[in-house]
Image (cartoon, rainbow, N blue to C red; front, side, top):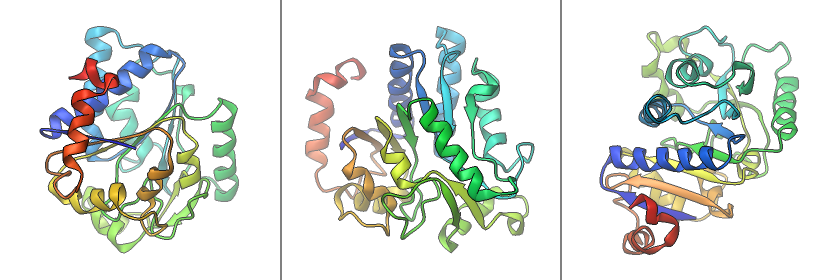
Length: 261
């Protein structure tokens, strides 16, 4: 795992955007795992700008999102399919048939989860998985006690997650209590993981995820097992990390980051 600390949220999001753009340019048929949430909105805005102003080409890419609420269809403004359409899919040249999310309205949810795993496998797996982190340390909706080898499945949402996401609903009572999510094992199968976290409210959980013990109670700690994981934080989110001097040295000295400095 590499940890990169940037001065503020804008700089952190810009670095994540640059990493994604470099990967897309290097592999026009990149298979991207995508995340939703407020933290990702700035990344998607920058990717759209790169597409419009510099011709960043998504035509050959395929995308698979981490999760979707059970019971929400693609036209529901609270669904993640709708979110992705608004923030990315509808603004770049991604072919609609190449964008994938779990179907939260499927009659047989277990069958839908199995289908989603097969669809990822059919394209050769995920090349780059973009991640955020919940305040309880979850990746996607892999809530506490998610097995580290888990696959795509339905998860009941914890009170912490419900409280965190309910303000995004005009009527918080309408927020679904379950979601389909990629499993921790599905995420760890990706060739590269890229996690973005910003803001003081993420500081405590980032410290646990990066420097704490690996535990199923905090699914993000599983990223310590990944052979190629980059965690990008701003100063606020990184303030509780113990090895900040080392993390800063990595970005300042490692050749991989030279073009981003």
